[in-house]
Each structure stands twice: as structure tokens, then as C-alpha cells.
Amino acid sequence: MTTIDTARPTNLRLQEVFDDVLQALLDAITRHRVTWEEFRVATEWLTEAGDQGIEIPLMLDVFLSSTVDDLAHAGDGTENNLEGPYYVPDAPFLHHPYVLPQRQDEPGEKLHFAGRVRSTDGTPLAGAVLDVWQSNGLGEYSHVQPDLPEFNLRGRLVADQDGCFEFMTVVPVPYAIPTDGATGRLLAAMGREPFRPAHIHFRISHPDCEPLTTQIYFEDDPWLDADVAGAVKESLVTPVTRWADAGGGQYAGCAYDFVLSGSATAPSALRAG
Ligand code: DHB
Ligand code: FE
Image (cartoon, rainbow, N blue to C red):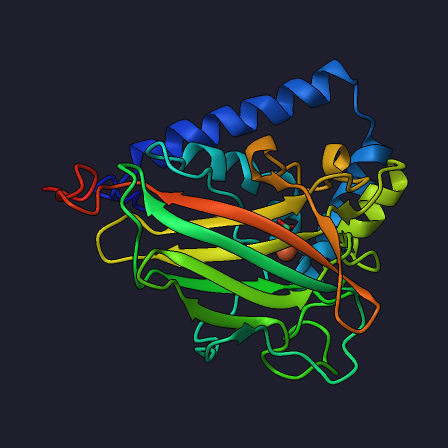
């Protein structure tokens, strides 16, 4: 006879959330009268996703993470946005004047990005560290695309005594999440596009404020309203202007001012106690 260990610890929160998730799935199965054949296809598809390593995290990222991220928003500074799957810690600290590391012939239009970092009470955040990463002009991220240099288009820069910063980079382009795995197959089967609008990722920190993880998008991007990850927030979209350069060509310019919550002059209520 087996004894049942009634002293096992239980996690009530897990129980509650799991029960609701399960009920939502059961309701969907019932409402749509899912057949055994469809159930079998779903099981095979999940098995395939599990065998493919990154596909389950990718799927969670694409379909669920922006809602979790919205719930994590605290304070009244710049809105946060997904970190996404491609952050790499310990990117090199760049030297002034800042240029994101790139290859000699980096594809894409030159972009000048300028802005200011301040706290919600208006104090400029001198010395704020901006950890910046983005895809290149072909929609490829270093660390993902194997032939790119290690920290291509990744780097950390420091805001000056007025909280101002500027750097040169290239204009990123809309990015298609991998289409050859289970997530891509699911999207294709539903006739949905795998694109995210072009964006630049920022993680901004200063000792006196709450750190901010966000993304900046660009006006007129065709995917702003059809982001596969559903992450775009209007407050994070900035216009791009074209300027003539000295050599008769042109470059793109944009600006964004970041606001970190928590006061630079008083201890943050969020961090207290
Ligand atoms: C996702 C987010 C990104 O920033 C990105 O470049 C690719 C995918 C995502 O949440 O799935
Ligand atoms: Fe991204």
C-alpha cells in the first residue's frame, strides 16, 4: 500500500493561478468543440516546440510577456516595455563621442539619437547609465546571428552632468521573429505576420531612481499597430527627421527624453522599507 504524504507543502498562489489557466483552456476547448484530431495536432505541436529549445520561451515572449510587463509598471516615469529575449549583460562601456559598435560596412541608414534622462521631479540624472541594444539594418541581433561581432550594436553610455546623452547608430528595421520553428509555424497557420516594428532597447539606471527597461519605436513604421508581440505603446514612439550631412548625403535623427521614477533628491517611496 502506498502512503500519501499529506505534509507536502502547497503553494496556494500557484494553485489559484493554475486553476484559472486550466479553466480558461477547458472553456476554450468546450466552446469550440475541439476534436480528438485537433487535440492530437496541438499535442504534436507542443512536443515539437519543446524539442526545439528556444521555441517555448519565444512563444511565451511573443504571446504573453507584454501583459506581464504592463503589470510591472510602477511609478509615473517613462513607460516600461519588454526586455525581449536578446538582452546581453556586460555590454562594453563606450567612450565619448558615443557610437554603438558596428562593422565598417554596417548596413542601414545612419541615425543620431539624442535625449535627456531626468527623474519624475525634473532633476537631471547626471551619470545615468544607458545600456542600449538593437538589431542592425537587416533586422539581425548580435549574439543571435552567428556571423555578427560579439557586441555589434550593443553598448553602455553615460549621461552628462545635465542628464543629456547622444549617440550614433544605424536605423533599425522591422524585425521578423524566427519563422522556422513552432512559433513561426503557428503564426503562419493562422495567417499572422511575424513582425515587430523597428525598435531600440534601453535599460537605464541611476542610483537614486528605479531602473527602467523600455524600447523606443519610430513614427510611420508599418508594424506599429500589428506588432507580433503586441508591445507598442504610443508614448514610446518618436518621429524621425532626415538631415543633410556634410558630404552631401543624409542621416536620420531622433530624440527621446527618459523619465525615471523615484526622486533624485528624496529617497524613493518604492524602495523604502
Ligand atoms: C521579442 C521582443 C523583442 O524585442 C525582439 O527583438 C524579438 C522578440 C519578443 O518579445 O518576442
Ligand atoms: Fe528587440
